[in-house]
Length: 515
Image (tube, rainbow, N blue to C red; front, side, top):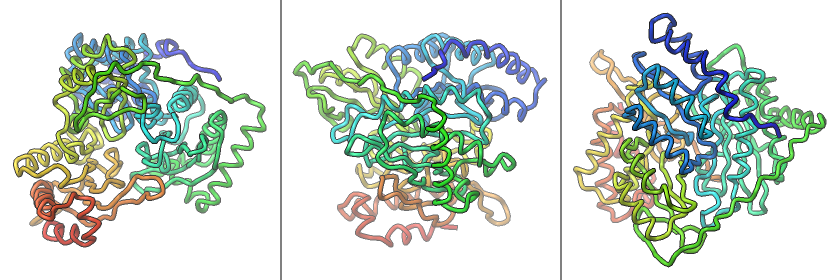
């Protein structure tokens, strides 16, 4: 398998820097710059006065070396804002033209590639964050996800696809990476093989993926990746950008079965080509042993490796303070086999810790969410995103503040999902409770509002798109959630149990707020 060395990408950076400086000098308009800069994993933020940079972390894995680079960049360039994304990357924000160019180039020296982080290219390959260490998983899918990620980098300079391509690997039916409704997903099976799903996705016209193959040997996955790319290039909609995602091919080709037929035809072509895409990655084993120290608590997970622990760190809204990132890097620098894993729900897991080490990491990440509700998911929001409609981060902050003030017990509210626009970067469509940025006319004047979705589910075999109940004014959402949490708490149940026992309860409570 051909792999592009990270250093090769340096040859492309002078053009990016030239056009970035031209944009900030007013010599290049916003749309032209956006169409160019996405290839490099960078976009201008709303207002055109600063840039963001997306650092790809294949399979969500952040090694100590990569985390140390992030910390060094924060300190060296005075970076003030960072974000854990729902595609398991780290974004740095509010960067000037010279800074974004410098960080992009320096990142390559530690194997962090930004190329293809935006635009119409294969995006960061996703993987269950606890793969390889989680009790009850089917098998460790991370080596296969990393191999797929390396292979897909080869397509960034190949024939241009209609739109971006997102690939995910899941290690169990928890399906935290949404493998069954990605553009291409590999769902682990108990027998050590993969079921393959294709042409799924959230956003406008959401679709669950089509099961195109079952019991696929892991060694053969790259044939399925290439077949996906070929299918998309052949049948993707190049004329209408709004319909240029893989999920629309189910309609273009006349339904799920016709799509499956077209995909399998491309798969046959790949196998018939004679190209050798078999892979055999090295097994990843945690050789570290526990030292007899122990740890426990709400943010502690026991790994399947005896005596080792994982610490859960969920900064509110997936926005860690840059100081905390630096402190964490310093804390784990000399810890054997320790690394950070990013999750699609904006949680970070610090893995392979002894009990004593876990206690040190707990202290370094003390700004973590304190309840299930505080682990809620939000996209970066309209204050930064050019296409964002509503400030999802501001809404989440207001809700967290209101819930804390009300003193609701943990479990009274579930994790909610907030997207600032229909793109569903906050995965609102498959959350237990979801909100999507909208507008509502009140007395003839447009008001900030969010569409409200309920009872979505991501678990494999129980996937469900949330039901849209209606629109709630943004200023009323914190009050509604507090009222919901108080009702649940009064029942003596947690939210999931209450919702199951009272199937109409949520709709009845929301009725007075729905516009």
